[in-house]
Image 1 (cartoon, rainbow, N blue to C red):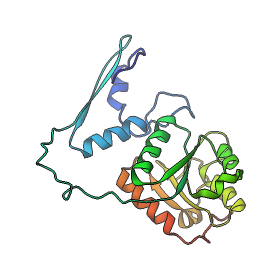
Image 2 (image 1 turned 30 degrees about the vertical axis):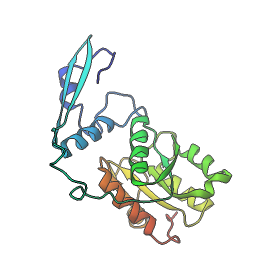
Image 3 (image 1 turned 45 degrees about the vertical axis):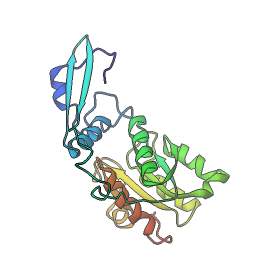
Length: 215
C-alpha cells in the first residue's frame, strides 16, 4: 500500500512500527495502527517493508508466507473463541477503532462505536442502549474525560454495566487509573492480538454484574 504524502525521513521510518510512536499532534492519533498490523504479520510468519522518500511518498509492503492447501487443515487451525453480544467501542483513533470492530465481528460480537467519552454517554442514554452488554473503551482519550471516568459515569447511569479498558500505558499518563480501579476493572494492554481480545472479552463479560468502578 502507498500514500500520496511527502514521505518520511529515515529516522521516522526506523520507528514507524513502534507502538505509540506518531508524528501527529496529541489527540490526533495513537501510533498503534501500523504497530498492530506489524504484530499480526509477524505472528503469521511474515514481515513488513517500508520504502519512503521525502518528497515522493511512502510504500509499505506486507509479505506473508505462502501456505499450500494441504499444509493446514481446518482441524489443525486453532479455533477462535467465539462470543456474542453488543459491544460499545469507544476509541478516538479511527484506524484502531475500525480494527477493533473487525476483530469483534470476527469473534461473533456486534458493535456500536463512539469517538469520545461524551459521545459514548449520549449513546448510553438512547433507548437502543439497552442492547449493550459491555463497554470497551480506551483509557486515554481527548476531550477531558478518560476511559476510567467514562466507566464510572456509565455505571452510575447503568449499575452493573460490564466494561473492559484498553491502554498501552496503564500506569501514570494522567489516566486517573488508581490501584483500586485496577483491582475493580478488567484491563487489556495495547498492542494486543485477537486472541488476547477474545480472552479479555470473555473475562470481562463473566465478571459479576454488581461490580462497578469505585468513585
